[in-house]
Image 1 (cartoon, rainbow, N blue to C red):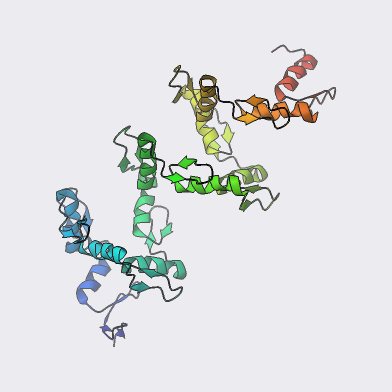
Image 2: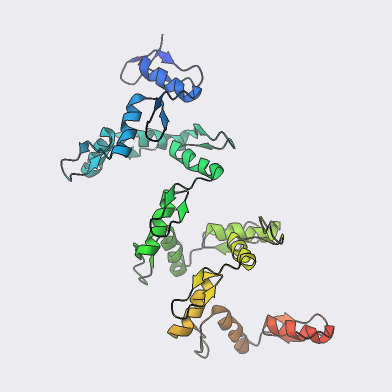
Length: 348
């Protein structure tokens, strides 16, 4: 005797591999193909295979451009009827699928199923290369591109390619000058929501990421991860030319340009090129006259933050760089290095 579903129907077909049950034999047979790898339906355009004929029919609409399901309110069209139904619920506010654990509601059943995995911890999609598991099939497909090297999303302006679609969307904003995320306090705009959230912390002073070794706090999680390498000594990025190692990926990429000679950042005024974007930004202030860093003691302004920090030592009297031979102190590291040559009889 099979189990009964919530509607009282007997679910007489049970998968002997994962114990999932079905009321219809056809659905049971289709499901078993997920375990056995059987995908008998093949697209004659791109050779992609499917476990169900109906899925193949829907897929072929991507090639033909056919979108037979149309919203009678806004005339938006869809390749699948289920997508039209969900779209209509978004407009009406209807969310008929409810999570029995937390009460969260959804417009589509598939969204509820994916959400329930948050509570159950189920990760049914497994990478056959590294065995990493995922809650969503789409996430597995994207992950597998890391192994294959496939970069399926291409910018039609500069032909730069990406593994992730959302990265392409963010990148295209650089060409279109679109910066949809704006902070209402200082009117600064961003291409990504996460960057806006991080910027807000400059105003609020929030630093939610804390080092469990030295208690130093950070506005961004990636900065904490990088900082912790100071304690662990980890330097995961290694140059394959000179074997120099780095704690940060961006420093590693910049270093590689020393070997390649690449200088991708170009001034649109004088055509001077740089290996780093921040150096170009600083250089452009020569043309614009901008001096954004101001001393709060004497109001002297600077184009670079490090120059302001060095200048403030004049007011504080601090001389943090000390010669370990004669104990002479200096306000700048460069002055200390020049001084050390006197003891070693070197001339720079």
